[in-house]
Image (cartoon, rainbow, N blue to C red; front, top):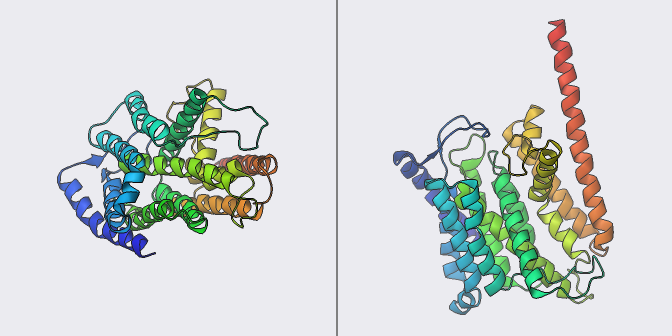
Length: 353
């Protein structure tokens, strides 16, 4: 709690200075066709987040822990630098994606952050190492960019980041993995400070400096959670029998949103990378909700999924994954029907007028 508070305080004190400097230097995010905001605003909020976390972790972690986790910290810093480069001097989508392979490969090969088996979901033989690496790289890339894609609404990425990081941080603390817990919770503290300046109407955006870094961290925590949880003894009070589904529940908003838009784009004959306004947060806005209300709805979905994973922690993936998929399909159906009802109502009102 102390180091989380320090991270919050450093970020909170840094953000107003950062906003003023970025405005003076004209380092602003411009409005665009696929963007919701209509004004130029600073977009390097991730810098203040990393400053708060870095200062806190320098105080909290002994040198031995830094050395033990050196490949993780180096890969995280590299992802931050990629985001910084994109925020200051924009990269093309292809350049940004290709550049992410460096920190991801470093994390997988040198830090051994890998998906090692099916974790009981399927009865499969041992997976060859090259396939383990490919599967792990693919998962990290997808989850990192999935989080980046939800950063389109004031307060959304910050709120979802806080929910996911807090859930992982508390769980790692309970199972005795204190350094991983500390990293997750100090980032959550810094994000809470960021929310004070990013809540509607926002004064600063997270930018790729924040979104890529936080997304990368969440993807790392998700894989680490699956591995640590799977190795826990059955007698542990904190073991989740459904390792994969529980991890998905914590990161459900970026996972659900990304899978949803990819399916929609493919059905329309478009590239999965085609930018549009079909994201989950756009659907709430189309119903007339404000940024703040939309964020609270989506955060509630995330919290409900985490609660579901905890309540069903003694059930396996084959039960929980279908339930999660069914809930997501119901949410998608309700949003679609609500939009159709609103269109009919507006159409009738226009005719009467």
